[in-house]
Image (cartoon, rainbow, N blue to C red; front, side, top):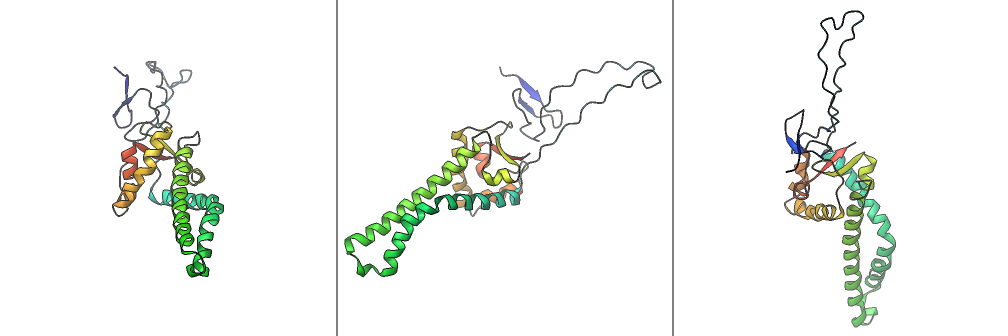
Length: 208
């Protein structure tokens, strides 16, 4: 049977290996030593008073707006990196369309445009997935946008997530967006600032 630990702040039962409470986010510091009974003359000159227990440090979660701004930063980072490839396929198709398809052999122009559009779509999807999944499962635990604002993606116990969980979180965002973006808006109203994709993947976004 796995050892458990009860949070001193909210009383929630957690795994003994967890670094943070899965409910309130309080970190689990090493348990303070049991205080020795105070002497009858404690506090009187020559008799030191017992030392107070260390205060519990609160680790806040990242809210909706700070995560939205981080998303915008990451959006432009990925687009800047992809610009050379987009220019290769996209501008070629644009040139054909700009000069008029009747100027080209009909068997060449349309397949090129469709091929270029398809390649651009696959590159964009793949780059967004790899960028987010690799960065959030790395030792940084965050994309560049999140790092700018001191955020980290963790599991429910405050631990680093692996590539598979980061991949699941990334594609779960599709569900958050399909339901009129309600899955993203949930970040502003849930107790631990989780979007629907966070709940599906079992992740949290914390500010350090």
